[in-house]
Image 1: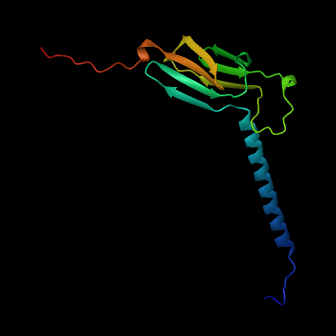
Image 2: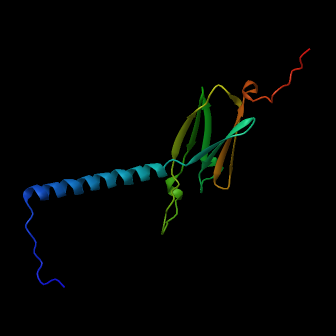
Image 3: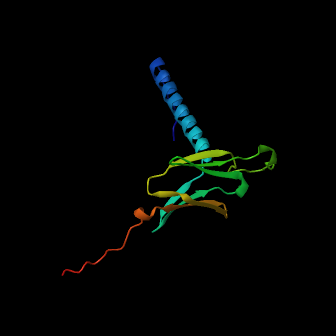
Length: 146
């Protein structure tokens, strides 16, 4: 049981240091929140390598297939989605957003850009990138010695 609580006055130095620390925490928190907001604008992507193709899977729930535009310019794959803000519902809670975005991916020389396909199903945009014939790994060949 405490009968007497003694507190000493803070010096100007201690107050300034505490204010600097609080300012730092606030700036860090603001940057963290801004980063989280920016990350929500770009859908998450998985890239899977198969024997003859690469699959680029983009998580984009709530979109329609007509919202997407997939282009190849030189050696760059460009995926954009345009969303009309007028058709947004009046959400009571909105934890994932449907917003316009643009993502680009550099394609290597192993991709056959004439054989790229895109499908949208169950909230995932899948882009199939076919490998060039020379980039497909061949099984080992046994050579007989004469």
